[in-house]
Image (cartoon, rainbow, N blue to C red; front, side, top):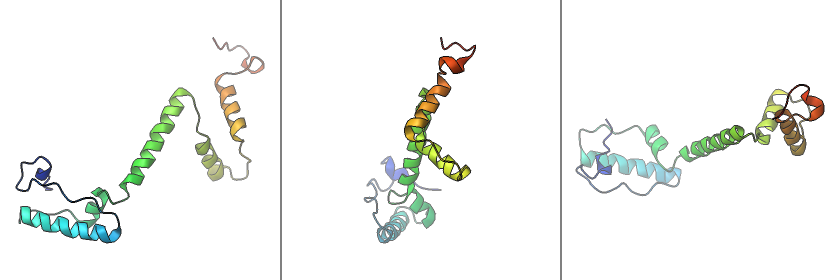
Length: 129
């Protein structure tokens, strides 16, 4: 079980861990410090493996995953209010329809606007109000 009692100040060591590592060498040093601190706090504690430590440390690439999640949230919010994502459209066209020529940004937004609010000649019996 991972001991996080130092975060609440109730454990044997009330000091917070060292600053986050910045490079791979620092990450190795940080893991060695983590192992040493864990053994000092509780000799019977089972420290997390190095791969998990790297995943949870601030020096790892978890911030890249956070950035991807933020992009997806922004994309979802835009879609909710009716703003389509041109970059997603280009990625889709490149991967699924490489032989087709994609719309320009202006043509893409005009197409999306026409699909959402059809003009008088396309609307037929549909009334926009």
